[in-house]
Length: 212
Image (cartoon, rainbow, N blue to C red):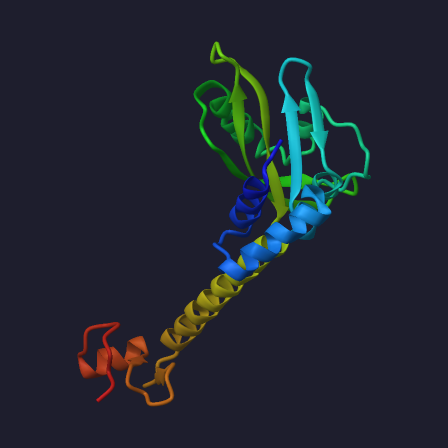
């Protein structure tokens, strides 16, 4: 089983940061009094174990929740793959195979398809355990839900794309009008651009800063 130090290290790794010594000491006290499951669940971390020989796949309730599944749902490797987004299945299968065959760290992000059809994201890390002959006998790790982070990233990318399109459309509109037009994006007008017609009239290279 995991020692107290192992559990604290796992929580820190999943959080992506090293804790202040006072926080680490508090975690040690909580683990000692409440046990591993309390700390892992409080950190929003789901855990899983896969026993290769028997095919038994054990997921904590939080791991099941990340796939939209009810607590206690029995899982299998095939069921896990089927719950992934079709475009992610081959990539995740390859990562698992590399962990089992070469001992690579299992460190992936994946899209999950819930029973209601909605798409969610999870980040998973794990490792394989080998017997004396070097054969993988077990794989275990942890997972966290990163759906909100991915949604925020997608919204930011979409906003940037929309802003770029709007700027391009505005520039095209200005260039289509035979008028001397000047515009700037900063209040001090330290950088200004002009319409194509204005550049033609003044004989300036197109696209340069026309601010004085």
